[in-house]
Image (tube, rainbow, N blue to C red):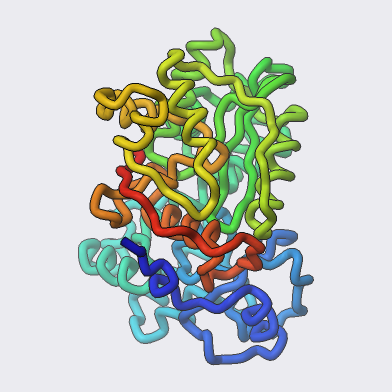
Length: 377
């Protein structure tokens, strides 16, 4: 059964969108946005600002994707206000957020401005694919993470993120990274850093010798995975990077550029011999191909261990490198994925060379008819 991945996406390749950006073409108004990696700003394609270099541009088809990837709205073209100009309430709130991005917004604040919180939730989801409070939360977390990466003092990071109390700030980061920011002293044996990709930010955790984790930053299971990693290694996780993080960042850049990449970054695999066998078999699945749990079980000579294979697949903490996204539904359909179904669609389309998504210049050959498979939990 063939999956019509080529029909799932509407955006043209990045070179077409970049030319539209240069031409300020209104054709993609409300359909595409450009994220500029050198400034961490996202804009409408008709933005009057000076145009960035093509290598610094990443295109997304929703405002939510831009925000989740850690980009701020441009103050010149005002993409949030433009998209929602038909709803004065949404315009008022986006203006208020941009005027005070560090504010800790609540539904009570929304009501105090004369708006019904439930109505505002629906409006923001309709226009941006994200709620107003989530938009405000992402802004605060992003600015706090940026301050920590710059090795700012904890109090400065707290103020930059707009938290009213140190305890609130520590609690927020404890949920994500498993540690309070006051404990980031540098020199930790395990260090985490962010890697920007066309699918949003990823977090990589490494020591001096190997990569221990690579996940999308918004993955719900990430806090638990970081906590387990720290406990297993009996070491706190700091902020920074070692050589394996630089290596995987370079390999990911090549992968997203469409090159036929063999990931060579050393991995610290912390699983049972059975799980490591499953992960090794996953890495044998070539780009453009898929497998089912039953096929994976047969490949490791354990045909009756389908359920255990599924559990090992879900325990993978090396997104993309150990390609559990190449496991699809038993009927050939795309089922769930820990990084989000939309990312799974993107990755399979990218690897099969059939996608018209932004950023694709894939040199891979067309994918083969996919076998059956299941989801990553």
